[in-house]
Length: 388
Image (cartoon, rainbow, N blue to C red; front, side, top):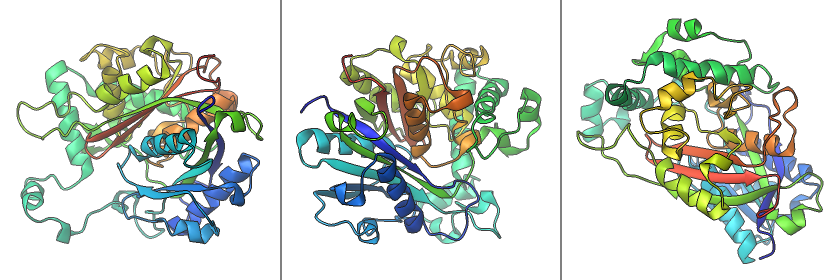
């Protein structure tokens, strides 16, 4: 099995308000860019893993769009925001087992339309509200925002977490985004800006919620031995894990208090041979500020219920003890599901971060979160081969 698997190529299209291209066309562009970044050609790929996304596009038909032939691994995967981590794990297992040699993993989405607001991009039609879903809709729970607001409120009620502490995450994440040329939101914000931004679903303000973006991101996974001789520095995949708690949103459950990070994190770190104290950089799935806070607790960076004080301390921002979401995350950078934290982890591991580059980046934790805290994935990445 050699030295394991590594990410050898990263391809990113334009991100944000990018119109006129379907998800499949965007995905094809990202794969081509990732392959070229690695110094390879499309003919070198013998594996392709496609994220299902919300609508199922681009699908495995992407292989035909790219003209790929004689693939040894081809699949579409779906764990919502945890899919990126699952795709990388599948690709790494394929490579280390010999089932494939060079696997591209890609996510693409194009929900934005010029004539529609960002808030309407993921709107559900009235026809979707039926059965139990119709009952929740009648009570006002008509969006993902409302359900995450319920989770955030539960954490606040149990542990005394405050809106200002969520705001500290929004501010630190924007600080990183100001240094990222690809970020959609680069103007600095203050805690007052956060508190004065409109309610989306109380207790979540507008600046507690992620962006909506069109675009695509792809990576190429191959063996660490091979990656060492390719065009860009390899990003070694030390460990991975998943956690799917299946919380019921009812009294007495752990919904809103714990996430699958509490399971996926220890699995990934044990595989990597590291502990929380070894992590230099975190790239966390930040669909909401609250998600960052609860994930940090579940990974063990602070005790349960102490996430508010931890993020308020300045630990996550530039110069902090735990640099987190160094490209601006999904709150201020771009929203490409789990590929947002993954892509920034690759940038940091390679030392390509420019003004925002973190000096110490030997061990990087990447998280993905899907559903309403239903699914979680964790990756441990490093610029060094495992065991070095």
